[in-house]
Length: 102
Image 1 (tube, rainbow, N blue to C red):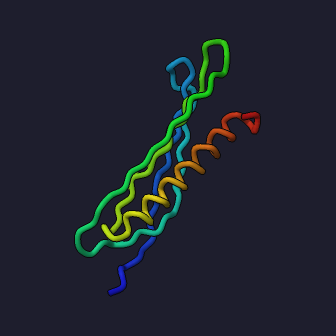
Image 2 (image 1 turned 120 degrees about the vertical axis):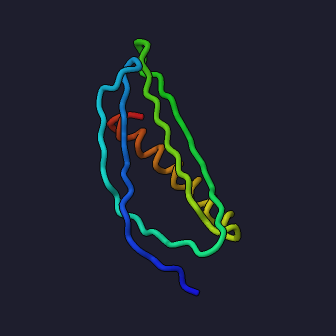
């Protein structure tokens, strides 16, 4: 039985803090593929964070995480996907914030 596929959007929100205060926020919508589940499913969740000391008592903190539903038999593949995706996105965000001087 083929699972029904459709497109949807995911809202990505970014918040940047300086000394605990919000200095900027951005939001974008990204198109993702959504697969309708038939029967019981599981969820895998993974997150990473990184703090960079910028000097002068300032730091940059970036946290990235994904929670993804999957079928129980797809758990290992889903976990590999979210770990790889979170890791890549964390370092991409870090490089963007540091202006390539990480």
